[in-house]
Image (cartoon, rainbow, N blue to C red; front, side, top):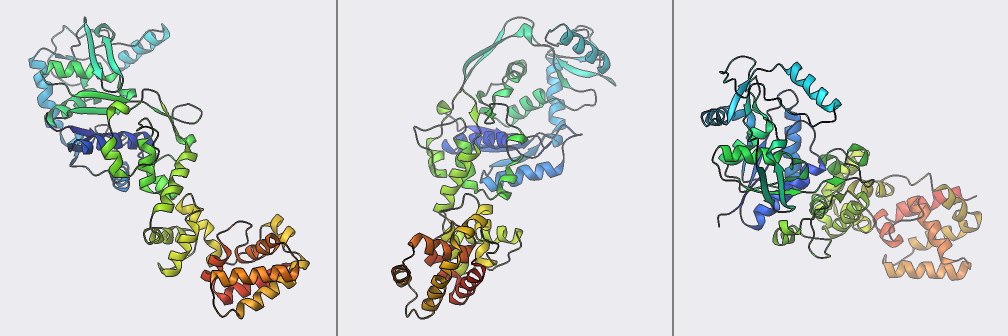
Length: 464
Protein backbone atom coordinates (compact mmCIF):
# COMPACT_ATOMS: atom_id res chain seq x y z
CA UNK A 1 0.00 0.00 0.00
CA UNK A 2 1.35 3.40 -0.95
CA UNK A 3 1.83 5.98 1.79
CA UNK A 4 -1.11 8.37 2.26
CA UNK A 5 -1.11 11.92 0.96
CA UNK A 6 -3.45 14.27 2.82
CA UNK A 7 -4.06 17.95 2.32
CA UNK A 8 -5.41 20.97 4.12
CA UNK A 9 -6.85 23.57 1.78
CA UNK A 10 -8.11 26.72 3.52
CA UNK A 11 -9.49 29.78 1.78
CA UNK A 12 -7.82 33.07 2.85
CA UNK A 13 -11.13 34.91 3.12
CA UNK A 14 -11.14 35.34 6.89
CA UNK A 15 -9.10 34.72 10.00
CA UNK A 16 -8.23 31.09 10.72
CA UNK A 17 -10.89 29.54 12.95
CA UNK A 18 -11.11 26.55 15.27
CA UNK A 19 -12.96 24.33 12.80
CA UNK A 20 -10.24 24.79 10.20
CA UNK A 21 -7.55 24.09 12.77
CA UNK A 22 -9.23 20.83 13.79
CA UNK A 23 -9.46 19.76 10.11
CA UNK A 24 -5.79 20.60 9.58
CA UNK A 25 -4.83 18.64 12.70
CA UNK A 26 -6.71 15.50 11.65
CA UNK A 27 -5.09 15.57 8.20
CA UNK A 28 -1.68 16.16 9.78
CA UNK A 29 -2.12 13.37 12.33
CA UNK A 30 -3.27 10.88 9.67
CA UNK A 31 -0.26 11.66 7.49
CA UNK A 32 2.17 11.48 10.42
CA UNK A 33 0.64 8.25 11.78
CA UNK A 34 1.29 6.45 8.49
CA UNK A 35 4.54 8.30 7.64
CA UNK A 36 2.76 9.89 4.70
CA UNK A 37 2.74 13.41 3.23
CA UNK A 38 0.81 16.44 4.47
CA UNK A 39 0.19 19.11 1.85
CA UNK A 40 -0.86 22.72 2.37
CA UNK A 41 -2.92 24.28 -0.41
CA UNK A 42 -4.33 27.81 -0.38
CA UNK A 43 -7.66 28.02 -2.22
CA UNK A 44 -7.57 31.67 -3.24
CA UNK A 45 -9.66 31.75 -6.40
CA UNK A 46 -12.21 34.00 -4.67
CA UNK A 47 -10.30 37.05 -5.84
CA UNK A 48 -12.61 39.59 -4.23
CA UNK A 49 -12.47 38.16 -0.71
CA UNK A 50 -9.00 36.56 -0.58
CA UNK A 51 -6.46 38.70 1.25
CA UNK A 52 -2.81 38.24 2.14
CA UNK A 53 -3.46 39.16 5.77
CA UNK A 54 -5.72 36.10 6.06
CA UNK A 55 -3.20 33.82 4.37
CA UNK A 56 -0.50 35.09 6.74
CA UNK A 57 -2.84 34.34 9.65
CA UNK A 58 -3.38 30.77 8.39
CA UNK A 59 0.37 30.16 8.09
CA UNK A 60 1.11 31.71 11.49
CA UNK A 61 -1.62 29.62 13.14
CA UNK A 62 -0.38 26.35 11.65
CA UNK A 63 3.18 27.18 12.70
CA UNK A 64 2.05 28.07 16.23
CA UNK A 65 0.23 24.75 16.49
CA UNK A 66 3.29 22.92 15.16
CA UNK A 67 1.47 21.49 12.12
CA UNK A 68 4.35 21.47 9.67
CA UNK A 69 3.62 20.70 6.03
CA UNK A 70 5.72 18.61 3.63
CA UNK A 71 4.63 20.30 0.38
CA UNK A 72 3.31 23.75 -0.42
CA UNK A 73 1.84 26.08 0.19
CA UNK A 74 0.38 25.71 -3.29
CA UNK A 75 -1.97 28.49 -4.41
CA UNK A 76 -4.89 27.96 -6.76
CA UNK A 77 -4.42 31.43 -8.21
CA UNK A 78 -1.10 30.21 -9.65
CA UNK A 79 -2.60 27.08 -11.24
CA UNK A 80 -5.10 28.54 -13.71
CA UNK A 81 -3.33 26.90 -16.68
CA UNK A 82 -3.81 23.50 -15.03
CA UNK A 83 -7.54 24.09 -14.58
CA UNK A 84 -7.83 25.24 -18.18
CA UNK A 85 -6.18 22.00 -19.36
CA UNK A 86 -8.63 19.82 -17.43
CA UNK A 87 -11.59 21.95 -18.53
CA UNK A 88 -10.66 21.25 -22.17
CA UNK A 89 -10.36 17.56 -21.30
CA UNK A 90 -13.93 17.52 -19.98
CA UNK A 91 -15.17 19.30 -23.11
CA UNK A 92 -13.38 16.78 -25.33
CA UNK A 93 -14.98 13.94 -23.38
CA UNK A 94 -18.44 15.46 -23.82
CA UNK A 95 -18.73 15.98 -20.06
CA UNK A 96 -18.92 19.79 -20.12
CA UNK A 97 -20.66 22.48 -22.17
CA UNK A 98 -20.82 26.26 -22.42
CA UNK A 99 -23.72 28.24 -21.00
CA UNK A 100 -24.69 31.85 -21.75
CA UNK A 101 -27.59 32.18 -19.32
CA UNK A 102 -27.45 35.67 -17.77
CA UNK A 103 -26.76 35.70 -14.00
CA UNK A 104 -29.88 37.74 -13.32
CA UNK A 105 -32.05 35.14 -15.06
CA UNK A 106 -30.41 32.33 -13.07
CA UNK A 107 -30.99 34.22 -9.83
CA UNK A 108 -34.65 34.81 -10.72
CA UNK A 109 -35.10 31.09 -11.40
CA UNK A 110 -33.41 30.30 -8.10
CA UNK A 111 -35.72 32.59 -6.16
CA UNK A 112 -38.78 31.17 -7.91
CA UNK A 113 -37.72 27.63 -6.96
CA UNK A 114 -37.23 28.66 -3.35
CA UNK A 115 -40.65 30.32 -3.34
CA UNK A 116 -42.13 27.00 -4.50
CA UNK A 117 -40.14 25.32 -1.69
CA UNK A 118 -38.15 23.40 -4.27
CA UNK A 119 -34.42 22.78 -4.41
CA UNK A 120 -32.86 25.39 -6.77
CA UNK A 121 -31.32 23.76 -9.84
CA UNK A 122 -30.22 24.75 -13.30
CA UNK A 123 -32.92 24.35 -15.95
CA UNK A 124 -30.56 22.75 -18.50
CA UNK A 125 -31.34 25.42 -21.13
CA UNK A 126 -27.86 25.30 -22.68
CA UNK A 127 -27.21 21.58 -22.22
CA UNK A 128 -27.76 20.64 -25.89
CA UNK A 129 -27.11 23.96 -27.62
CA UNK A 130 -23.45 23.12 -28.37
CA UNK A 131 -22.27 26.68 -27.72
CA UNK A 132 -18.67 27.61 -28.45
CA UNK A 133 -16.48 29.49 -25.96
CA UNK A 134 -17.05 33.21 -25.91
CA UNK A 135 -17.56 36.25 -23.71
CA UNK A 136 -20.05 35.91 -20.84
CA UNK A 137 -20.11 32.14 -21.20
CA UNK A 138 -19.53 29.81 -18.28
CA UNK A 139 -18.54 26.16 -18.52
CA UNK A 140 -20.96 23.67 -16.94
CA UNK A 141 -20.61 20.01 -16.05
CA UNK A 142 -22.92 17.59 -17.86
CA UNK A 143 -24.19 15.73 -14.83
CA UNK A 144 -25.66 12.26 -15.39
CA UNK A 145 -29.43 12.50 -15.05
CA UNK A 146 -29.91 8.93 -13.91
CA UNK A 147 -28.25 6.55 -11.49
CA UNK A 148 -26.80 6.93 -8.01
CA UNK A 149 -23.45 8.28 -6.86
CA UNK A 150 -22.24 6.57 -3.72
CA UNK A 151 -19.11 6.08 -1.66
CA UNK A 152 -18.04 4.50 1.60
CA UNK A 153 -17.11 7.33 3.91
CA UNK A 154 -14.33 6.42 6.34
CA UNK A 155 -16.13 8.07 9.24
CA UNK A 156 -19.81 8.06 8.27
CA UNK A 157 -20.09 4.78 6.39
CA UNK A 158 -22.10 4.32 3.14
CA UNK A 159 -23.51 7.53 1.60
CA UNK A 160 -25.50 7.80 -1.65
CA UNK A 161 -27.07 10.59 -3.73
CA UNK A 162 -29.49 10.26 -6.65
CA UNK A 163 -27.92 11.91 -9.69
CA UNK A 164 -31.31 13.36 -10.56
CA UNK A 165 -30.93 15.57 -7.47
CA UNK A 166 -27.67 17.05 -8.77
CA UNK A 167 -27.79 19.76 -11.41
CA UNK A 168 -25.23 20.85 -14.02
CA UNK A 169 -22.89 22.85 -11.80
CA UNK A 170 -20.64 25.59 -13.15
CA UNK A 171 -17.03 24.44 -13.54
CA UNK A 172 -15.49 27.65 -14.84
CA UNK A 173 -17.12 31.05 -14.47
CA UNK A 174 -17.49 33.43 -17.38
CA UNK A 175 -14.42 35.33 -16.16
CA UNK A 176 -12.29 32.18 -16.51
CA UNK A 177 -11.99 31.49 -12.76
CA UNK A 178 -12.68 27.86 -11.76
CA UNK A 179 -15.29 27.11 -9.12
CA UNK A 180 -14.50 25.28 -5.89
CA UNK A 181 -15.89 21.89 -6.88
CA UNK A 182 -13.88 21.81 -10.10
CA UNK A 183 -10.61 23.26 -8.82
CA UNK A 184 -10.51 21.00 -5.77
CA UNK A 185 -10.88 17.88 -7.92
CA UNK A 186 -8.13 18.98 -10.31
CA UNK A 187 -5.86 19.81 -7.39
CA UNK A 188 -6.48 16.49 -5.66
CA UNK A 189 -5.86 14.57 -8.90
CA UNK A 190 -2.65 16.38 -9.79
CA UNK A 191 -1.32 16.27 -6.23
CA UNK A 192 -2.11 12.55 -5.88
CA UNK A 193 -4.23 13.08 -2.78
CA UNK A 194 -5.18 9.69 -1.34
CA UNK A 195 -7.42 10.80 1.53
CA UNK A 196 -9.78 13.80 1.63
CA UNK A 197 -10.44 14.52 5.31
CA UNK A 198 -12.74 17.51 5.81
CA UNK A 199 -15.81 18.79 7.64
CA UNK A 200 -19.14 17.11 7.07
CA UNK A 201 -20.58 20.34 5.67
CA UNK A 202 -18.79 19.20 2.47
CA UNK A 203 -20.85 15.99 2.17
CA UNK A 204 -23.20 17.57 -0.44
CA UNK A 205 -20.18 18.55 -2.55
CA UNK A 206 -18.75 15.04 -2.61
CA UNK A 207 -21.11 13.41 -5.17
CA UNK A 208 -20.53 16.28 -7.58
CA UNK A 209 -16.78 15.91 -7.16
CA UNK A 210 -16.92 12.12 -7.58
CA UNK A 211 -18.75 12.56 -10.88
CA UNK A 212 -16.02 14.93 -12.09
CA UNK A 213 -13.34 12.40 -11.09
CA UNK A 214 -15.19 9.72 -13.03
CA UNK A 215 -15.68 11.97 -16.05
CA UNK A 216 -11.90 12.51 -16.14
CA UNK A 217 -11.19 8.81 -15.70
CA UNK A 218 -9.29 9.55 -12.48
CA UNK A 219 -8.90 7.35 -9.42
CA UNK A 220 -11.04 8.41 -6.48
CA UNK A 221 -9.46 9.31 -3.15
CA UNK A 222 -10.98 7.98 0.05
CA UNK A 223 -13.29 10.44 1.78
CA UNK A 224 -13.70 11.05 5.50
CA UNK A 225 -16.14 13.72 6.66
CA UNK A 226 -15.66 14.73 10.28
CA UNK A 227 -18.50 16.10 12.43
CA UNK A 228 -19.09 19.78 13.02
CA UNK A 229 -18.04 21.69 16.12
CA UNK A 230 -20.93 23.28 18.01
CA UNK A 231 -21.05 25.88 20.75
CA UNK A 232 -22.27 25.01 24.26
CA UNK A 233 -25.80 25.93 23.14
CA UNK A 234 -25.46 23.34 20.35
CA UNK A 235 -25.63 26.02 17.67
CA UNK A 236 -22.99 26.22 14.96
CA UNK A 237 -19.73 27.50 16.45
CA UNK A 238 -19.38 31.22 15.84
CA UNK A 239 -17.66 34.31 17.21
CA UNK A 240 -20.23 34.66 19.99
CA UNK A 241 -19.01 31.36 21.46
CA UNK A 242 -15.43 32.51 21.94
CA UNK A 243 -12.40 33.99 20.25
CA UNK A 244 -12.90 34.35 16.50
CA UNK A 245 -9.52 33.03 15.39
CA UNK A 246 -6.86 30.54 16.44
CA UNK A 247 -4.25 33.24 17.01
CA UNK A 248 -6.61 34.98 19.43
CA UNK A 249 -6.14 31.99 21.71
CA UNK A 250 -2.40 32.54 21.57
CA UNK A 251 -2.98 36.19 22.53
CA UNK A 252 -5.15 35.03 25.42
CA UNK A 253 -2.28 32.94 26.77
CA UNK A 254 -3.12 29.41 25.73
CA UNK A 255 -0.26 27.04 24.94
CA UNK A 256 -0.12 25.31 21.54
CA UNK A 257 0.25 21.87 23.14
CA UNK A 258 -2.99 22.41 25.06
CA UNK A 259 -4.81 23.64 21.97
CA UNK A 260 -3.64 20.65 19.90
CA UNK A 261 -4.74 18.25 22.66
CA UNK A 262 -8.10 20.03 22.91
CA UNK A 263 -8.69 20.02 19.13
CA UNK A 264 -7.80 16.33 18.85
CA UNK A 265 -10.49 15.44 21.39
CA UNK A 266 -13.15 17.35 19.44
CA UNK A 267 -14.59 14.35 17.65
CA UNK A 268 -11.86 11.77 18.23
CA UNK A 269 -11.14 9.54 21.21
CA UNK A 270 -8.76 6.87 22.44
CA UNK A 271 -10.50 5.10 25.28
CA UNK A 272 -11.03 7.39 28.26
CA UNK A 273 -7.70 9.18 27.89
CA UNK A 274 -7.98 12.97 27.94
CA UNK A 275 -4.39 14.20 27.96
CA UNK A 276 -2.07 13.27 25.11
CA UNK A 277 1.46 14.19 24.18
CA UNK A 278 2.01 15.00 20.51
CA UNK A 279 3.78 11.66 20.10
CA UNK A 280 0.80 9.83 21.59
CA UNK A 281 -1.62 11.61 19.27
CA UNK A 282 0.43 10.53 16.25
CA UNK A 283 0.70 6.96 17.56
CA UNK A 284 -2.98 6.50 18.39
CA UNK A 285 -4.81 8.57 15.77
CA UNK A 286 -7.16 6.73 13.43
CA UNK A 287 -10.22 7.68 11.43
CA UNK A 288 -12.03 4.65 12.85
CA UNK A 289 -12.24 6.44 16.20
CA UNK A 290 -13.64 9.69 14.84
CA UNK A 291 -17.21 9.96 16.05
CA UNK A 292 -20.30 10.64 13.99
CA UNK A 293 -21.91 13.16 16.34
CA UNK A 294 -21.06 16.86 16.48
CA UNK A 295 -18.53 17.99 19.09
CA UNK A 296 -19.15 20.67 21.71
CA UNK A 297 -16.61 23.46 22.12
CA UNK A 298 -16.07 23.69 25.88
CA UNK A 299 -13.96 26.69 26.94
CA UNK A 300 -13.80 25.42 30.53
CA UNK A 301 -12.24 22.17 29.35
CA UNK A 302 -9.73 24.08 27.22
CA UNK A 303 -8.75 26.19 30.24
CA UNK A 304 -8.45 23.06 32.38
CA UNK A 305 -6.18 21.45 29.78
CA UNK A 306 -4.14 24.61 29.49
CA UNK A 307 -3.68 24.71 33.26
CA UNK A 308 -2.33 21.16 33.08
CA UNK A 309 0.19 22.11 30.39
CA UNK A 310 1.21 25.23 32.31
CA UNK A 311 2.02 23.04 35.31
CA UNK A 312 3.91 20.50 33.20
CA UNK A 313 5.97 22.98 31.18
CA UNK A 314 9.42 23.79 32.64
CA UNK A 315 9.57 27.24 34.22
CA UNK A 316 12.49 28.09 31.95
CA UNK A 317 10.22 27.71 28.91
CA UNK A 318 7.35 29.68 30.42
CA UNK A 319 9.40 32.60 31.75
CA UNK A 320 10.07 34.28 28.36
CA UNK A 321 6.41 33.85 27.44
CA UNK A 322 5.27 35.31 30.76
CA UNK A 323 7.71 38.18 30.24
CA UNK A 324 5.84 39.09 27.03
CA UNK A 325 2.44 38.97 28.75
CA UNK A 326 3.74 41.08 31.63
CA UNK A 327 4.93 43.68 29.13
CA UNK A 328 1.38 43.87 27.75
CA UNK A 329 0.12 45.04 31.17
CA UNK A 330 2.93 47.53 31.61
CA UNK A 331 5.36 45.41 33.65
CA UNK A 332 8.82 45.17 32.12
CA UNK A 333 11.24 42.69 33.64
CA UNK A 334 14.17 40.51 32.68
CA UNK A 335 14.12 36.75 32.35
CA UNK A 336 16.00 35.97 35.54
CA UNK A 337 16.09 33.49 38.39
CA UNK A 338 13.59 35.72 40.18
CA UNK A 339 11.15 35.45 37.29
CA UNK A 340 11.62 31.68 37.24
CA UNK A 341 10.69 31.56 40.92
CA UNK A 342 7.62 33.69 40.26
CA UNK A 343 6.56 31.32 37.48
CA UNK A 344 6.90 28.31 39.77
CA UNK A 345 4.67 29.90 42.43
CA UNK A 346 1.93 30.59 39.88
CA UNK A 347 2.03 27.42 37.79
CA UNK A 348 -0.35 25.50 40.11
CA UNK A 349 -2.88 28.36 40.06
CA UNK A 350 -2.97 29.88 36.56
CA UNK A 351 -5.09 28.73 33.63
CA UNK A 352 -3.51 30.89 30.93
CA UNK A 353 -0.40 33.00 30.52
CA UNK A 354 -2.58 36.12 30.62
CA UNK A 355 -4.04 34.87 33.90
CA UNK A 356 -0.53 34.18 35.20
CA UNK A 357 0.57 37.71 34.31
CA UNK A 358 -2.37 39.21 36.20
CA UNK A 359 -1.66 37.00 39.21
CA UNK A 360 2.00 38.09 39.11
CA UNK A 361 1.19 41.81 39.39
CA UNK A 362 1.78 41.96 43.15
CA UNK A 363 5.38 40.82 42.74
CA UNK A 364 6.12 43.98 40.75
CA UNK A 365 3.54 46.53 41.87
CA UNK A 366 2.19 47.78 45.17
CA UNK A 367 -0.62 45.46 46.28
CA UNK A 368 -2.97 48.25 47.33
CA UNK A 369 -5.88 48.66 47.11
CA UNK A 370 -6.56 45.52 49.10
CA UNK A 371 -9.57 43.30 48.51
CA UNK A 372 -12.23 45.30 50.28
CA UNK A 373 -14.17 42.58 52.12
CA UNK A 374 -11.03 40.70 53.13
CA UNK A 375 -9.35 43.88 54.39
CA UNK A 376 -12.37 44.77 56.48
CA UNK A 377 -12.26 41.32 58.05
CA UNK A 378 -8.53 40.81 58.60
CA UNK A 379 -6.78 44.22 58.63
CA UNK A 380 -8.14 45.37 61.99
CA UNK A 381 -6.54 47.37 64.83
CA UNK A 382 -6.20 44.14 66.81
CA UNK A 383 -3.90 42.59 64.19
CA UNK A 384 -1.63 45.62 63.93
CA UNK A 385 0.75 44.69 66.81
CA UNK A 386 0.91 41.13 65.45
CA UNK A 387 2.09 42.41 62.07
CA UNK A 388 4.66 44.62 63.81
CA UNK A 389 6.02 41.64 65.74
CA UNK A 390 6.31 39.57 62.57
CA UNK A 391 8.14 42.39 60.81
CA UNK A 392 10.59 42.83 63.68
CA UNK A 393 11.32 39.13 64.07
CA UNK A 394 11.76 38.53 60.33
CA UNK A 395 14.65 40.99 60.44
CA UNK A 396 16.30 38.98 63.22
CA UNK A 397 15.96 35.54 61.60
CA UNK A 398 19.43 33.93 61.35
CA UNK A 399 18.29 31.62 58.56
CA UNK A 400 15.73 32.70 55.93
CA UNK A 401 14.18 29.25 55.46
CA UNK A 402 10.61 28.04 55.20
CA UNK A 403 10.96 26.07 58.42
CA UNK A 404 12.28 29.13 60.28
CA UNK A 405 9.45 31.35 58.99
CA UNK A 406 6.86 28.73 59.92
CA UNK A 407 8.30 28.52 63.44
CA UNK A 408 8.19 32.31 63.71
CA UNK A 409 4.50 32.37 62.73
CA UNK A 410 3.67 29.62 65.25
CA UNK A 411 5.44 31.48 68.03
CA UNK A 412 3.61 34.73 67.20
CA UNK A 413 0.30 32.86 67.08
CA UNK A 414 0.85 31.31 70.51
CA UNK A 415 1.97 34.59 72.07
CA UNK A 416 -0.84 36.68 70.55
CA UNK A 417 -3.63 34.18 71.02
CA UNK A 418 -4.90 35.02 67.53
CA UNK A 419 -6.00 32.28 65.15
CA UNK A 420 -3.40 31.28 62.58
CA UNK A 421 -5.90 31.97 59.78
CA UNK A 422 -6.29 35.57 60.98
CA UNK A 423 -2.53 36.11 61.04
CA UNK A 424 -1.84 34.40 57.72
CA UNK A 425 -4.64 36.22 55.92
CA UNK A 426 -3.53 39.59 57.29
CA UNK A 427 0.03 38.96 56.09
CA UNK A 428 -1.28 37.64 52.75
CA UNK A 429 -3.29 40.82 52.20
CA UNK A 430 -0.33 42.95 53.17
CA UNK A 431 1.97 41.25 50.68
CA UNK A 432 -0.40 40.52 47.76
CA UNK A 433 -3.55 42.58 48.28
CA UNK A 434 -5.58 39.38 47.92
CA UNK A 435 -7.10 36.73 50.13
CA UNK A 436 -5.76 33.91 47.91
CA UNK A 437 -2.19 33.60 46.72
CA UNK A 438 0.82 31.29 46.51
CA UNK A 439 2.51 30.21 49.74
CA UNK A 440 3.57 33.03 52.05
CA UNK A 441 7.16 31.84 52.42
CA UNK A 442 7.60 31.66 48.64
CA UNK A 443 6.23 35.18 48.31
CA UNK A 444 8.45 36.57 51.08
CA UNK A 445 11.55 34.93 49.65
CA UNK A 446 10.91 36.50 46.23
CA UNK A 447 9.98 39.95 47.57
CA UNK A 448 12.92 40.12 49.98
CA UNK A 449 13.04 41.36 53.57
CA UNK A 450 13.00 45.10 52.84
CA UNK A 451 9.94 44.91 50.58
CA UNK A 452 8.14 42.55 52.96
CA UNK A 453 8.70 45.00 55.84
CA UNK A 454 7.55 47.94 53.70
CA UNK A 455 4.34 46.15 52.76
CA UNK A 456 3.68 45.05 56.33
CA UNK A 457 4.05 48.68 57.47
CA UNK A 458 1.63 49.84 54.75
CA UNK A 459 -0.88 47.25 55.93
CA UNK A 460 -0.47 48.38 59.56
CA UNK A 461 -1.16 51.95 58.45
CA UNK A 462 -4.33 50.69 56.74
CA UNK A 463 -5.62 48.82 59.81
CA UNK A 464 -8.81 50.39 61.11
